[in-house]
Image (tube, rainbow, N blue to C red):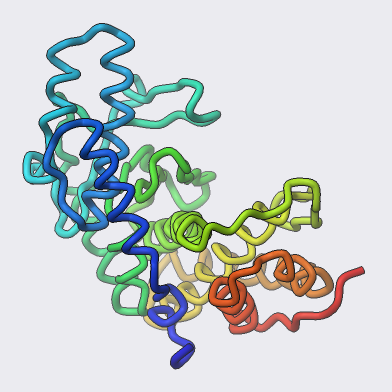
Length: 300
């Protein structure tokens, strides 16, 4: 692998091909003309889920919309090269596809407010400045803003395997905080795509203690946490240098908390990585954690 930069860490051959193949299959099912971009990949999954919902509800007009829509029809939602959604709490959905609430783009989806769009633009600019622009373009092309919070309030964010490329997140007025959370969830999306592109299957019956959850997790969940939090630390370390105001102690607290978490995984990371047969993925996770400053040792 080339120089240890965020760009190098998330550059992996095969992911784009995986995304394109998946998009092509969905386009074939829907009968529409989707393109080959990461945004098309993310939107395709919204259209597929939306079509299934509409078909189940016998909503012929809505089903027709999902079957004919392409990215070109969603430019009113664009914060180039992303689309930004800002649904009302009442518009959030719950179903068997997810334990958490989610939202699907639809014919009645309105654009986010100018203020929300400005915060997203600033967050994307900060992420790009510090080397994470490609990660967000390729693995967070659809951003779903939820609740605006203060720095002293709990922030929630998540991604769903059924909606790859989409991120659901609370946000504050501070772009560094939104960038941090976008990077975290995009890292989860990246790892899901990387594992799928390399056809990696991880054992479900092997677990490791995750300090982030305070409980034992499968290899899949444990490595997801190691990878995603590594990238957020790498971003926050850089963003902290130019940050000003109230966000500075917030970022400092994040770094201190993460230092404790990473210190707790030194004895089991190598063993957890040994279950990943794809060297390219194993190397990237190990090097990201290593850059955070954690030594990798043998397991208990």
